[in-house]
Image 1 (cartoon, rainbow, N blue to C red):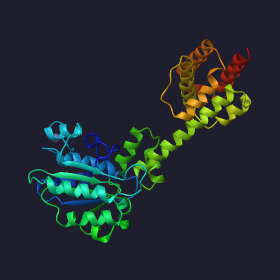
Image 2 (cartoon, rainbow, N blue to C red; image 1 turned 30 degrees about the horizontal axis):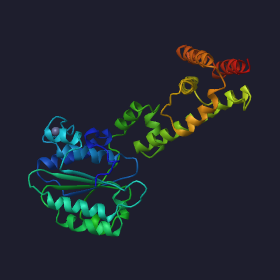
Image 3 (spheres, rainbow, N blue to C red; image 1 turned 180 degrees about the vertical axis):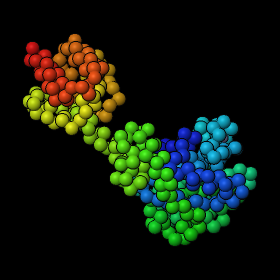
Image 4 (cartoon, rainbow, N blue to C red; image 1 turned 90 degrees about the horizontal axis):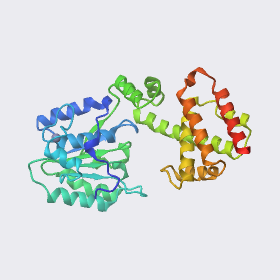
Length: 332
Ligand SMILES: [Zn+2]
């Protein structure tokens, strides 16, 4: 039932802008007033899934605190070893967009068979709106009579897509950003230049910034790889290639070219690197442009340029000089 993509809750941290929600849950836990089913709603990118994992680990812990799970007790150790008997994670299977009724039936059976009345049994249903009608119906009875110690955590961006019968049996928490300052700082720790501005641009949902950045970074890598392949394969003039890089900081260009050069020398020696297939193929096409000593010369030059204070010179001049020398080497 726990599929291969299940993340391990013992590694989850509470998104700092959602910390208040955990304090409220902890208070209810201590008062023994935990709801049997939580519906974590809120916009995509708010951190609900991360929060659900964090809360699951904390609720299973023998001595949870305001910081979450202790990380030391036997429950925490079992969870870290992916051997905790009282935890389940349900999501869509790879290649499918629905949570199938079989997965829900197994969950329901497990809940009924393992009731021990002592500790919690916690199950996360991620993207709960992906349950089809049969799945949702299969869950209803459990939501009506959950049994002692059961905590279901349903996570969704689209609570309106869940049947009203399911929604009404859950304690709904609509998660919003409770601390934009903390969220901005967190983004900056993740390498975002101006966390406050980035957050404003996406309506306050921090993981949206991270996802957008990952996409942009990958586009950038593709563009830099193309420039490098064009250079080595004589597919465009040096001036034109340099021009295509004018929006990218020199340091990032040099770092990327160093990586590609290291990959090319590695391939020459019969080693493969763990890059994506498109990059490996692009690099394969460049390997024979130069002798191995020449690749090492280029690598050294890239390292030298990286070490020098690249902020003090203009991107275009640095890259023009480097590219012209590489073209000469290829011709020579
Ligand atoms: Zn613990």
